[in-house]
Amino acid sequence: MSLLPPRTRIKICGLTREADLDAAVEAGADAVGFVLYPKSPRAIAPERAAVLAARLPPFVTPVLLFVDAQPAEAIAALARVPGAIAQFHGDETPADCIAASGNGRFRFMRAARIPLGEAGAGFDLVKYASDFSNAQAILLDAHVDGYGGGGKAFDWSLLPPAVDAHLVLSGGLTPANVGDGIRTLRTRCKTLSVDVSSGVEIDGPGNKGLKDAGKIRQFVAAVRAADASSFSS
View 1 (cartoon, rainbow, N blue to C red):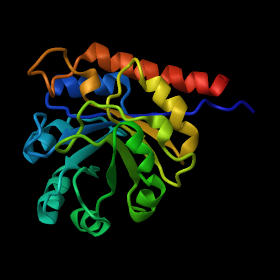
View 2: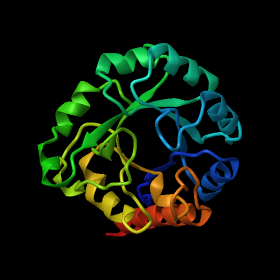
View 3: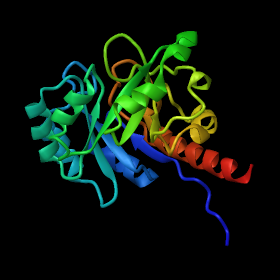
């Protein structure tokens, strides 16, 4: 009986346009993300997220990103998008996350903001995952000024060797480095997924939220290549 290679799941985040959502789906993304944090340059309204999510085929998961949203606000947005998962990216406590996800009505992920440089070694990810044990996954992002993704990569090698959680690697990922991230972290957690936003956007100022279909395809191909190499090694 032959074994199948491991499959890293992929989320394309910060979508604002129909064409970009369609490109993510066509490339093979497992999930797409919509930013509902008004201060983000990629922010869209919940009503717009619902319109975009309605284009999704079966088995592609919509994810709604919140930053310290009021529970009623988050629950109302999640209710607009069937099958949506919440992603809490602010200073939410475990109790805040449970309340904003409707006390179990909706699944959620919790973002962990990992300090850049050697300071990343001081972040207790094992304790963080335990504190947020109700989360479906812990998303790893770099700690930058403000909230949401800053397009920065932290030092993946400084994370603990074993974390009892599903992890989602984010922060500064591109088609060029995502394979290294997968190879570094795959064995350190239950399962590993990856999340990209700025790394697949159109080059140039003022293009945050505007994706490049070619970069999306390259990113997905790089993930699949890393999966294949991990299986054969």
